[in-house]
Amino acid sequence: MGGKVTGFLPLYDRRGKRPNVSLRRRNPRRLPRPIAFAGGVLYDEPDPPRKNYGFKDRDFQRDNAASSAVPPLPTAKELAIMAGPVAQHGRAAAGKRKADDPNDVYAALEKNRAVEKKLGLNEVEIRELKSRRKRDYWLLLITSQCALGAVAYVGRANPFFFVGAIAAMGFTAAALTWIMWQVMNKY
Image 1 (cartoon, rainbow, N blue to C red):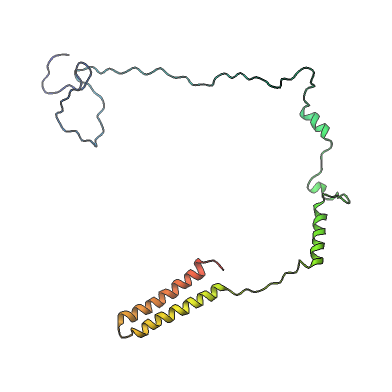
Image 2 (cartoon, rainbow, N blue to C red):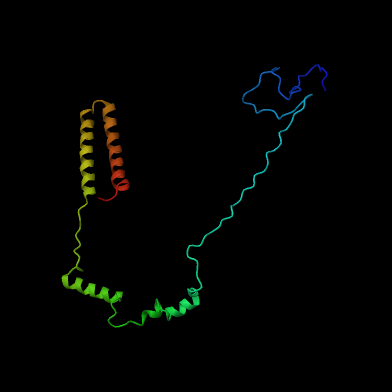
């Protein structure tokens, strides 16, 4: 393998390093070629040893260890027996009202309604409010149309001013209508 070969240059020398000679220019945008060897030996590095991951064993220390003198905790069945009979909720309890129950919501609401009726708080006066938006729309529209109409009247001898003012009147009316009635909320 150590003989001289004409016509090609080995990619690696005997020490496994690349020679410093290049026969052609390399394109920096081109991906590197896969590693190959001609006349030299390429040594692969061995893989590093595999790491084993896991959880450490934990030792727990009980702070409140149960002693034999303390009775065991009650089970779920014993707790249910100690709680008593099952309470009725929803539709099952709807027909069973206790008289003078302080927690009866419906009785408290009826008392509140009676007080509101006595004081006249249930009466609502409906007033029609004038729209400020309508007022602002007409104010802006009439003002802008009068100003642009004046420009059209004064510049009627020049077609540039006259046509521009008429077009501006149409655009202003359309834009103002769109903004006031479609874009803005009521105020």
